[in-house]
Structure formats: structure tokens, C-alpha cells
Length: 435
Ligand SMILES: [Zn+2]
Ligand SMILES: [Zn+2]
Image (tube, rainbow, N blue to C red; front, side, top):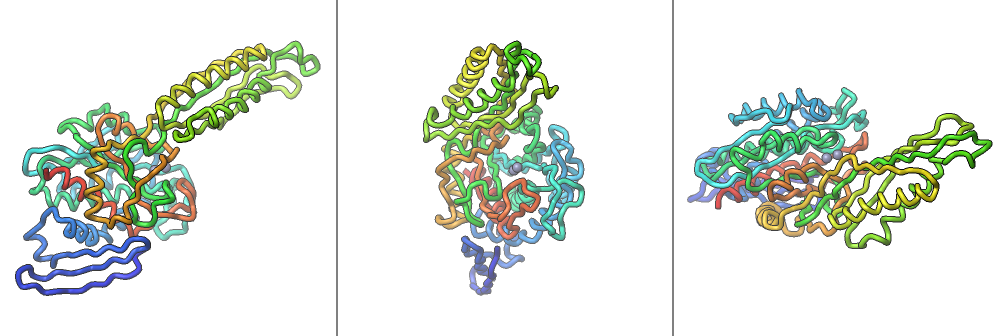
């Protein structure tokens, strides 16, 4: 939350008017030097103080974008109003755009000189949750931006404007990627298949998530790490086949519910201590279906759930161990267990070199104490992982603690830090494209 703004106007003969703005936020105190508006147009450059000032100047606009998008939450690939809104804002900035994977959008800010391409990616979708924040701009359509993707889009629009004003300085291009369906089916895969990382080929990619995924990252601070930062998820289904019989003669049947119960308990034991404690893993059965008549032994049960890992060795170990455990328990009971892996989502793994470069850029925007080194990956999953499998990049976290967790009907973000996300994106992209 911005506590206070102190503005000092200083006249310097050689440089014209400069405005010093001290922005005091909870956990973040930043000093910004900005030139007087009429001077700024004549000397736009890739200068951290200028970029911070540009982001602060855009602050109200970024909040307006966030609130407009918050009012119109849509789901999965069905993002027609959201997509329309983004296209309109890009038109206002005179930036070209094209649809990709349905309602996804690609926009290219082409620099004046040849050079590499950096992609900046945001997700766009909301959740089927009825909002209970009571905010004046709360959604009323039964869906809700309860994960902060409205803020992500607004921060990327802010960065787009800052970068577009400096495109004459850019060596290469900055590609904006607005991705649908992060929460549901996964929009990264069809966007990649449709060629969003080609023409021009993307050399590095950045993405960010706002909120409290990492509690150690305070308001307006940024959490960064190299290597795995979010978990891989494997969704599985186990079909247990037994034999039906009257409950009066259970010995004539094979009880699928009893077998399923033993399997549920045995699978829980696979996580600790069999797994290396430095490489976290979870395994959860989240759905059980089986049984018909109250007086009949159940002949078929389906168990579904997922396991999460950050290490491929642990992932492979769990895959084979789950199958072995299910089949051996089923065999002991005379039943049959069929284990199928429904879907695999990879871990989100940050590239060391791009992360190092990003840290240098972030250090120009934030004080060192506001850049937090993440030490343990989150067990949540994120389909930014698919982009990071193709292109080196980094996924970082902008802290915005809230009493309610992500995906809660009262989840909210601190709008006063949104300018930081725009400034970080812009500084990192301009640095990458100015080598
Ligand atoms: Zn989410
Ligand atoms: Zn999210």
C-alpha cells in the first residue's frame, strides 16, 4: 500500500526540471527521479530512473486496466470480451496484434535495430467462483479473477506502453504473449503449437505471478530463483476390478472397496520417507467412485488423484512405485488394478543465465532487500512451464499478501504495487534488447 508520496521539484540548469518522488510502500521504499513531462519526450531512454517514473506515471492507468478486466472475468479459452479489451488497448498504443489459439493474443514491439527477441507472457483467464470481495468493481457474472490474472494483464499492458515508447532504442523485438486457459486445459500448448515462439524466434521469456504463492515475498517484493520453482503434476486414475456377491456370502466375491482402501493408505506411505527430503513431493487421492447396492459386495472402484514433484528422478520413481503398489495389493486380494496416467504437466524450471540477467535488471528497479531468493519450490503447477521447456526464461513472483488464499471468493491483490511489475518487465526486456 502506498503510504505517502513526497515530491520535490528541483531546477538544474543543464537538465531542466526534475521531480524527485519518494514512494513509501509497505516493505518497499523506492526513490524515483523523473524528468519534467515536456523534457521526458525529448530524451526517452533505457534508464532505470526513467523507467520507474514511467511506470509510476502509468500507475492509475494500470489500475484502471486491472479493474476493467476484473469486471469481466471469463473462463478457459472462452475469453472473447477479455481478448477484445486487450486488442483495443494495443490499438490505442499503435501496437500490431494477432489472435493465437482462439482468444490468445500475440503482439510484437519491433525495435529499430536487429537483435534478439524477448517474450513477456501473461495469463488471461479467471475461475468459476462467485466473487465475495465486495469491491466496487467486483464481478457479477459468477466468475472471478481470484488468482490475479487481471493484474498480470494490466502489468503487461503497462510494460508494453513503456517499451513501445522506447522502441527506437531496441535492438531486436519484444513479443507480448497473452495466454488463455492457464487455470484449466492449458493454453500454452496450443499457442506453442500455433507458432507463438516463432517469427521472430523467441530467445528468452519472462512471466510473473502476483499474490502470496511464496509467503516469504512481502508486499512489492519480488521472489526469484534459478532451477525448479513450481512442481510437475502427474494426474492418474486407478481402476480396481473385483467380483460382486451378496453381503451374506462375502467369501464368494472380491471386495473392490477393501482393495481400494488398502491402496489409498499404501500410496500415502510412498511419499515420506522413501523420497529424498530435499526434493519435495506430494500424492493425493482426490476422488473415489464405487459401489451400487447396499447389500452387494462392490465389484469396481475408481480412484483418481495426482502426484507432484520437482525432480524427474523422483517423478519416475513414483510412477513405477504407484503401479507396483496397486498391482501387488490387488493381487493379494484376488483383484485387478489398472493404473493409467491421464496427464503430465512439467515442472516450471528457470534458466540460470536468464535468471541472472533478470536479477541484474530487477536490481535497477528494486533495492536488494526487496529481491528475495526463493529457496524451496511451490508445489503448485503452472503452464508457463511449457514455454520454459522450449525457451530459456524465468518465472518470478510479485508479493501481494492477502488474508484469503488464491482461488478464494475474497482473494484480492494490492493495486499499489502493480507499477513494479510493469517496471520489472520493461527494464528486463529493454536490457535484454540493448546488448
Ligand atoms: Zn490460479
Ligand atoms: Zn494464477
